[in-house]
Image (cartoon, rainbow, N blue to C red):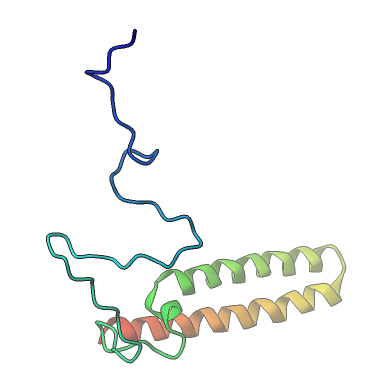
Length: 119
């Protein structure tokens, strides 16, 4: 006979007492800790904390947008050099054009991020 005095009671399989949704039900609204009223939803026309979102939104507000584009531009420069050294000038020229375009876009994102960050 097993002892039940020190047995751990399983709640929902994960150890928490929060009910877990099945995925097909309607979403559960968040409730503030210590209160019974739900958290108000963010309005779509509400400005961001630093003066509003720009035309590109989160890509400008995050510093990772321009950094990732700069890395892609450097990879394109590497492909450009590889194709030129291999004697395939058409592909090298195409990747030179791609690297210039990605560099210009990364530079524009960086400038927009600096403008957004200093507001």
